[in-house]
Length: 235
Figure 1 (cartoon, rainbow, N blue to C red):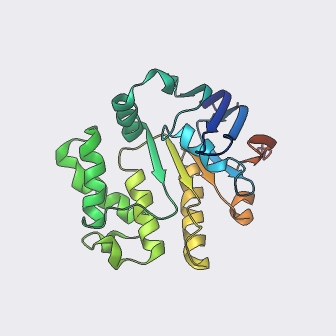
Figure 2: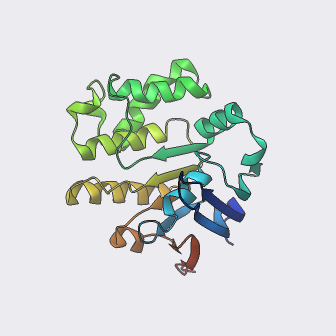
Figure 3: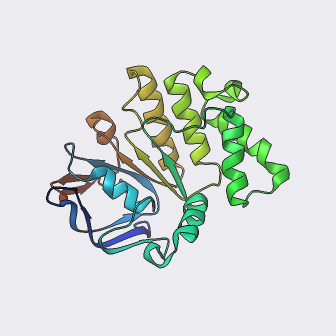
């Protein structure tokens, strides 16, 4: 049996107004669903709408038209405060440039994510954070500031932070784009393993090798889906 659908996009369009010039349609009537587990790679040339699509799925932006639902929740029905709380609890976000708070230790970055949502009991937060850092291989860096870590270590710490509140959905925007080859391979392996654990992991990437490991590939061009293929599952 196929996995249930986690994400439903219906006729999504996103238009950006540009001062002194014509508006730009980043997405044009995109409709698709994404299942509750597995690795989905979103690929395409620069300007094709990849990051815009990811931001709409994660509730980081709102569509100009159409609807986005995740786990049955219509994101358009949420106000800004409600959307922020939903995002903190339900979605883990990984950025190309890590976005760790530079004045907090790696451990404190994870604790803050849990403090914001409050779904993990306070007495359990430190042990959970350390376990997540161990899972991604940087537990020995827990008490350092992010700037003391390599790029690959920072990205793994950022993935641990994204997992802090145990979200079903993990989204990553070019997570290997700022890393050397070895660090990129480590992060690719980690995200692939997380998808194998039963999460839905949606990754925007230019790395065709990474994309080739995905369970599903969505290719965008000029704001539209031009390819949507899934690997055949073994019986």
